[in-house]
Image 1 (cartoon, rainbow, N blue to C red):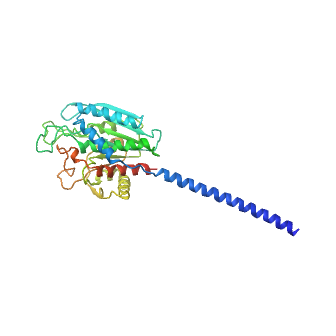
Image 2 (image 1 turned 90 degrees about the vertical axis):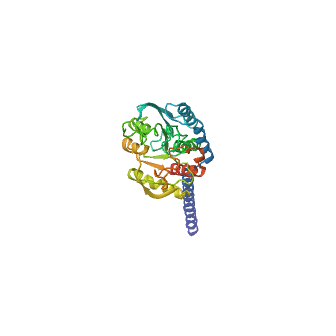
Length: 334
């Protein structure tokens, strides 16, 4: 009897040990699977600054991209076709906008969507047009500028981001919107009657007439003049007011990625840029990554609205700092 009891006890013990072993194996497998999924979710592509630089150069090769000009029309087609290589979801929003000088500008906002079915979305903005005159230069003021930094750099970064989004699908939805007619603003010495809100005509139009009436993103990031050598990006006051949490997210991400020399934890004055109208009219909390230069009267880039805004003004390291920071934000977003 004792031997039978001992045998029964031994069988029960073996069964218990077997169950515990299977359970632990299941838990371990589940944990490894979760670790693998987490690792996959936060794997961030590497931003190619050479590619971004080439995208800037291709825009500049069209010449000034002033609305109604030949270069403007050719560049619009190039941007549309380039984005269509990366996604089938591309929209060109056309509108006739009235400038401060009464000219009717044939504008095109170019919109590309990635992971289009996702309701969890963020949006990236930049303007692609260029200044129709060099009002901050000492000569040739009436001649349009090339706009390598002011117009070209932000689009170059966003096209390289788009290329990465096509290769590695993000867990969230991402929209890229290239605004037109941002830089056709009234100069200070204009002989025309003052016009309020003369800048950022394309973003004003989109914010009031979104390509999808129900469109919304949980936040937006605007790029403007993001290609100059040793550029620094401070925490612009309007961005802090409308989307302070997003500012902190982006600047902290930049610091973690090793770009604290570019992204400075210092709040500076609010400016009127495309993000102002996105915040005001579209009510999407949006920040502005824009160069702040304390050494210039405007506090903008030293080449701002001058003929020195050419390819010599573009630095690949700055493009890398901004572009890699954007990719880090996108691929770590939940």
